[in-house]
Length: 382
Image (cartoon, rainbow, N blue to C red):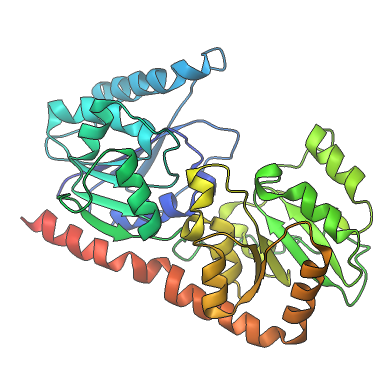
């Protein structure tokens, strides 16, 4: 057998369900899985699998933003050479566009087999000739859905019809988590003053204009039978200008999470809520085609939570197909939100059951990874 290497410049491993789970799957097929990740503000993720090693590369704050990818690439190459980590015909998994040139340089020497995992879509219209050429060498491409696949190939100026890569659809989901820590305070238990008989609506993930945080907070000012909870992957800083604006916008029924939960403890975040909110502003390629790349959407459905989403291709059509929530056409329309909440809460089990059905049929990582594993097994036997 050989080793597999994962080049993850962005480095937010502990909040990347797909990367964690793909690494675990690869560890069953390779002697070792080495992950090269940039140190970030997120906590490191610790794998139980002994043959998965994570090398966190420190990228100095003193480097200019435009210099960081090159510095990271040099550090990874130096580490590989110093520890003699790479062998001829090993596999390399590239994550997003920042991996292509450096992995291309490394693989020229070692004749590596290349794979591509798309987490976020490229937002540039033009990429270097070298990036496009490396992308064309991929044996396998893993991407969330068909719409994102077409956009990905267009960005890299690659003919999808004549591509030699084997393509697999892998929505943003994860294998079952490790056992959560016992007796953690859950998302709702943080708050002591939540009114009884109110729907617990939550937007979990980023808090920003990109997900209409302020507009939604404003709408909830006029809703009496529900509360709104915001939870972020990092500690919410109340002195941040955007957070201060949110508090100013809604002091009635907006609750800001005080706790940060590890990846394996997310059951404490999603289980106690009633309705999940997944709204995105279509400002770029990645968000306009968010669909099955939405981590929060997948998690709501996995934990059987009906979803309120905005009208966005690839997102709202999933909700409507499975009738597992409600779709908002105008984010700032209070009546739409009120009707959506009332509809879901009046027949909650129906929408909850549909949410879980949607998860099993569209998002379940365990089922979606099988075709890739089968093809990888055939390739490794050759």
